[in-house]
Image (tube, rainbow, N blue to C red; front, side, top):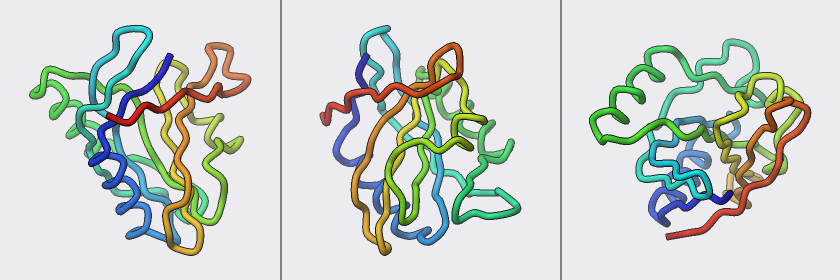
Amino acid sequence: MRITIPTAILERIEEQAAETYPEECCGVLIGSDNESVRKVMHLSETKNVHDENRTRRFMIGPDDFIKAEKFAREKKAEIIGFYHSHPDNAAVPSEHDRDFAWPWYLYLIASVLNGKPSTMQAWKLRDDRKRFDEIQITIS
């Protein structure tokens, strides 16, 4: 499996990650799935509504999630994953990420070091929820 993402969407995620630094940004990836390739066609930016530590945690609120679902339906697409940033940390899922992730979805993580976007990696949680597998990103 791989994920295909337009350059403009990757750039917007990086911008959002820098804008929200030192807190985590988050949002919803909207597109299509044909088993071997998931194609991101749109994103739905959301607010990080985590109420404890937004520098190390994120949460997408129900209103933003419903808005993303509606947008996906309007575009004849589906929610295929989520993205968030890791301020001053690697673009690798944390144990907290694993605890709250859902197996079918893709997770795009953007590392932001000292306020500047660094690396971005995509991940998919295994069905047994024991670990994430890295997913190849293809830029379109």
